[in-house]
Image (cartoon, rainbow, N blue to C red; front, top):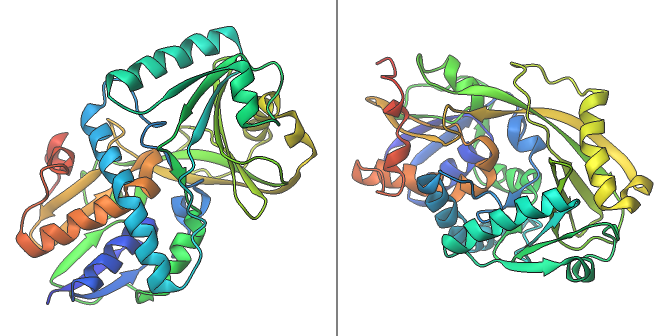
Length: 342
């Protein structure tokens, strides 16, 4: 048994702690605001297909592996915590608002097919058949059947019910895991992670059934409906340091394309407007690995922290038990950019 101190109580740190506990290790999580940070404002899309980006094949393989682990992870967590995670695996509708957007979507669909991913092109009529609240002006799109979603706030609460969490600094531990999001850079000198601001909205209303990822006049937006009537609209990407101000411009940048795609959203209740800080890296991929004896980092997950939580947690547990990271995760060692100070 190893004593493990996890610094950071977001979904990554909490998932690591839970998996370590399951293996019989002694674990504590340390965070003054557990469940907050990027986790508290994340939409929770499990979008290995939707998040596929040109030129990022190693990351895409990691995303796909993470998506395959989510059904088991969600079932085990829900059973252990006796809490509903709002986990769903009913796919994503990709929507183009203009002819130019449709050409961009078509290129993305071709890329997905070349990667061997399941994707079904849809005409405008077929898109609206799947989501009748979509505007009659939409030009077409595609269906991504393997994408899903979960409520990150519910996941965090479920994990916090299973692991010991403290707001005080840790005492001596045999292994310290730095999973503090963008703040990890202040704990490990030279760690190439930075805050990337994202503004996000929460509405309330019924009628939508699946995640919508829309492209409207070269703007991207996602709309994530929950079974309880919550609808998450996000998210901006802004290089603003640690500023988390919610701005009128940010809200407008989200509502304009969202309402263009789903006009009925204009009548939904606006429940919350928040901003958070994603942990970004130079190549938008995570930082996972040993930086010095007894210290491991697991951060830099950028837009994919919720999706990557199970695969990251399993990687840290394997490292703890065997001394080696799994091959799938080795490309994401933190020293791939620069030699992190030891």
